[in-house]
Image 1 (cartoon, rainbow, N blue to C red):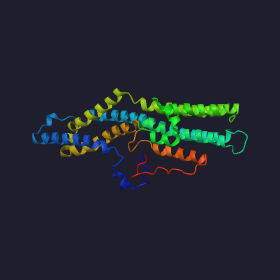
Image 2 (tube, rainbow, N blue to C red):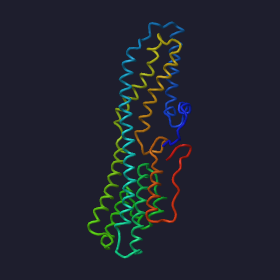
Image 3 (spheres, rainbow, N blue to C red):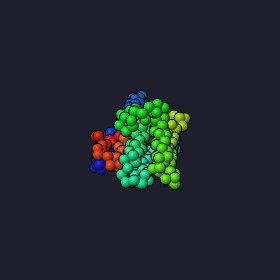
Length: 310
């Protein structure tokens, strides 16, 4: 996600990275070149009978702008819902670590077995968060898992859904702590509630990742925008004349840009410049939970590189 400080108006106008221009410039160049060819032929061969009026383009353009706006709203809703779900994961992880610290007790002050159990559960929670991030981004979580889970625990993770398997192991740790008398009977539902909330967050994120906007919907909007921009010169020749390519370039930038923005934010869990900073959020949870158990060494927060936070 781009996290640049506030910039001047001029710098914002000419910003390239993170803008839709990165992906749309070939399309804009194509339709502008086509508009230049049509304009040249119209002027060179005096083809006034082949020009259209601007009325159909005005009508279609208005409807298409509404259609694009609706699609972009739906795409941004997916982005924002993903951010809210990860915000919930931050909160429930902190709450779960606090529950381990305050509700997991043997009655003996500084009991080393209780401390070991607390640390093991919290570290497994950190492993879960990292595994969940890798699960959404379809990457390898081995490095983070080896830092927070012992070899015996990792042997149980040879499954298709690693984060869910880790939650299952955490649930078993809570059960063992209850059987050992470290958790009171009426505190068990509190731990289970936190684990259930983590499962709900993961399910919500998987729903966003695995259910994109309907394919025919995307195909239709891409086709309409392409045909509209390619046909635009025929409706502008009489009024714009030799400046038709310039007008086509400006209008196509707007429509292709809106179209590209919808695609850009539709899948918020990938690693593009405008996607959610899952690595930074995971590191924040990691630091918070390590602080909760009094760990000596804390990792550094993820810093933005060239204005982009991953």
